[in-house]
Image (cartoon, rainbow, N blue to C red; front, side, top):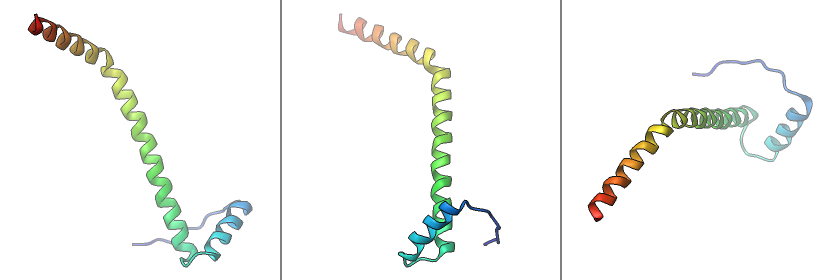
Length: 79
């Protein structure tokens, strides 16, 4: 499904996009759809990166305790 969207672009952005579209076999509509799709993926990755960093910070102390426990067990087994 597609929807009609009205948006305002800065002149320089539209001019640059028009130059690219004129050198490309795809339509302006296809170009903007592809560009927005790419930007959405980029934003989702940034949000995921932030979420992973936050979650990692929350469990960092516990992870270090588990690592120390494993190292102690390893030392005991090698004796």
